[in-house]
View 1: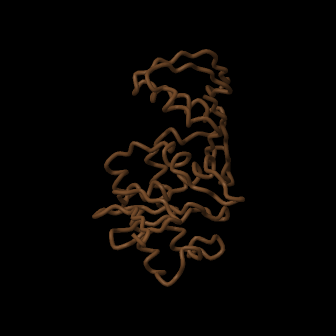
View 2: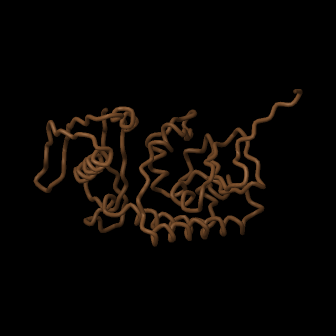
View 3: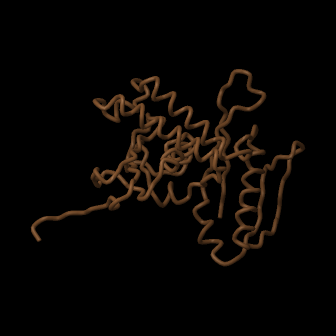
Length: 239
């Protein structure tokens, strides 16, 4: 009775730890993939019963872009929230081969980290001091995760981004047996969408879609970009 204790990690299963707050200067929020021999503190959040596949997805630049777009802030640093970031994140539907590739690249990240056991995560994920082999391991994992998302991420303009997002909502509504009624769609000559208004009705529709409100951002290298520079498109969604 004279000792307070809170045990958060699962018993007999691997888990991912995610820092509640991380520097805005980092490209990758340093997450951990741990087993039952480790004890988590209240400075992190955990994802129980996790696999290397889950770790690979969450530590990829796809998830980092999502996190930077929807997360809260503590001063200017990222504040990771399970409600705003994790629960709203759109997971891919990979093939068995794609899942295996992500597991392989995720393990490669952990293997490189093990080479620098005497270094802190802060120094490993500082953009100025990040080891070259760790950065390369992350980049390979990024490519593997992007491939798992398939065609929906191969867009070259903001209007195409809107069109792809609209298709995703249609597919999601169909999977939940909701009714979709298009009210107004403003198309471009190239097949993109400038603006779309549609009504989705059905049991539980608002409860599941209300978290979609906000700004969605996609980063890509257009086919017309000869210099390989990354372009960013944003879409505003209102529910």
